[in-house]
Image 1 (cartoon, one colour):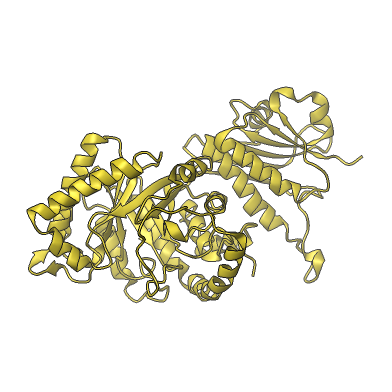
Image 2 (cartoon, helix red, strand yellow; image 1 turned 45 degrees about the vertical axis):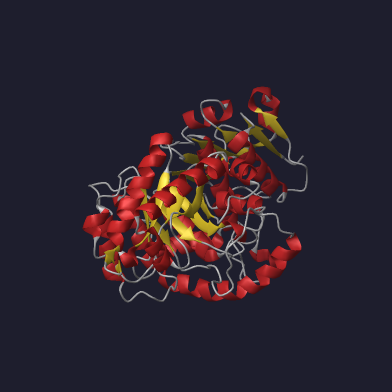
Length: 486
C-alpha cells in the first residue's frame, strides 16, 4: 500500500494558519489524493508508522518536531524569524520520510515553509541525468526524498517593498507573493488613505508583513514651489498641523505599523533662492516628528530622503532626530539608480553609503530604497482627489496589464543578471554596519501580485544571504518554484 503524507500541526491561527494553508495547497498540487491534516495532540503511533509526516510548528509545542530535534535532525536558531527544515528519512523507522519545519517564532515557521516550497521543491523538480523532454522534471513527493537540512536567519531585519498604493491591483495576492519571498514590510504611499486600509493591514499582518503608510510632508511633483510656500512661519505651522491631523484622522486608526514621509528634497540643487534645503528640511522634520512622538511615543517614523539635494551638507543632516529612521534614495549609481546599467560611479556611491551608515553615530538607524525595477509612468500620472479601494481589480484587468509589463521586465531582467553584484555588495555593506537596517525595493506597477519577476526574487534572496556569491543567489532565485519561468 502506498505510504501517504500526513500533515501534523500544533497550532492553527494567524500567521501559522496562513503558513499551513499555503503549504497544504502547494503539496496538494503534487499528490493524487486529498492531503489529511491532524493536530499533534491527536496523532497516534499508527499514524506515525503508516504515513510520511509533514510536521510544522514549534519544537516547544510540537512533540514530533521536539523528537526530531532530540535526534539531531533540527537545529532551530533562537534569533527572530529563524527556522530549521529537515527533509529525508526518519532514523530508526521503516522507510518513513518526513518534511519537518520548525520556527523560532511565527514568522520563522512561515519562512521555513516558504523555503521548503520555493527552494527544495523548486530545485528537486529537476531530475539530473535527463537532457530533454518531460522526464527532465520529477515530482519530489513521488519518490524517495533527497536529504536536505538547513537552519536560517535573515541578514537584514526589515526586508521591504516600496510602492504607490493605487498600483497594487490585488493586495491579497501581492502580500502572499511577499511572504513567498520572505519579505516582511511594505511601504504604501498614497495621496489619501485607502478606504479599505484596515482590511489591508489585517491581511498583511496575518502573513507576517508590517504596513508602513507613506504620505507627504511638503512633497509634491513640484518640490521647489513647495519650499517657497513653506519658508515662512505660517507655512511651517500650517504643514505641521496638516501632518498631525492627517495621521490622527486617517492613518492612526488603520492598525498600521508606522509612517513614511518625503518632503521637498527630490531636487538636483542644494539651495532654492539662497535657502539651504538640508537646513530647511532638518528643522521641519524635527519639529513635526517631535510633535507626533509627543502624542504617539511609540510611532515608527521613516524619513524618505533624496540624497541629490543634501549630499554636500551631511553635517546638517546629523541633527535629524535619532528616533527617526532615515531612508535614503538617489544616492548615486545602481542599485540606487533607476537604470541597472548606471554603474560607472559605483565606488563613489559605495563610499557614500559607508558615510551614511555612521551619520548620526556608530550604529546609524539607516534605511535605503533600491531601484532598477519597474516604476510609475510619470508621463501619465495624476494626483488623486480622494480615497479609493486598494487592490480590488479584476483578474481580467491584471492579465491584460501583465502583457504590457512583461515587455519591460524582459529588459530589466537582463540588467539584473548582468549587474546584480553591485546590489549584493551594497546590501552586504548595509547588513554588516546598519543598526536594524531597513532595505526597500521600489517595485511599482510591476504586476508583482500576478507574477514574481526574477529581479525581485534576486533582491529578496540577497537580503537573507548577502554574503553568498551572486552566482549562488541568482541560481537560488532562478530555481525558486514561485518565480516566473519564462
